[in-house]
Length: 342
Image 1: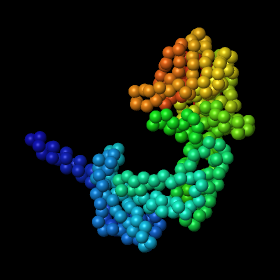
Image 2: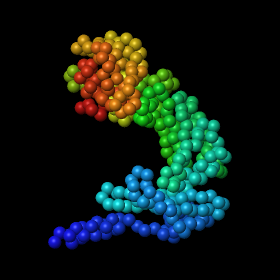
Image 3: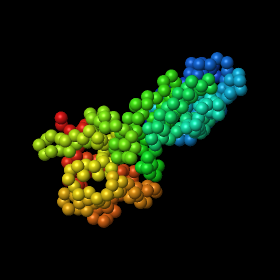
């Protein structure tokens, strides 16, 4: 008696799954290319290729498209789990292929081409590193040149990565200072890009902070959700116009903690990169961005010294303390702007 119920359940599941997916033919792919890529003179190969998804295990279908000038790109009929049922969507590498082909003729003193291929689709973007405001300005100027070039594809993915000493550890990358996007009509805004860089400099007390004026720092920090302050004991706070926590909500960096301790009257020896002090309860602490050792994740992790003993940070890539841990460990009543009862 149970067997028909099982068959019915399987049939119901199959019907539900089929209702959430669409079977595409070559005409559908041609319609998708015309709408998505804005081109007319092309041909869709009649036979699609099966592709077994590298990550999800579902079978996808790759369509090859050839333009009149011989350019070949692809459309992937991508099957994946859509939270409640199996679904499929179309994706193309049209703009990626055109960027790969056009790159040699584009102005690229600062930007390099990064490309890869997965499940039959190419992906490509322009990437550059910067460590100063001047670098950032030069790269945005180059993006302007690229956008104006007759060889520039309609959409170009770009990433400008802020390079600083504590950007990477293991597989983790701190990308708060990066500027990324798709180059279509507008060039990235220089002031917005500089502010992202500035807030990382404020967070870690980086030397590049000296390239910003007091007014620029104040305008970025005051009212920021992560602006730092010290409680005075009567439910009020002393807010600092030049101190800010991490923009991804990791807390107070080693460098900013150094500043807070100094401004709160602690006897601190060293620099924001490496310093020691005695907490309110007499515990000796030594903190340094260079304190990294092997951890269970198979890579390096940050630690600090507590009475000379190595003490791991809560997660291997953490070089920030939460406001609560700063208070518990060091007796410093620090808060962030979003946390305070104003």
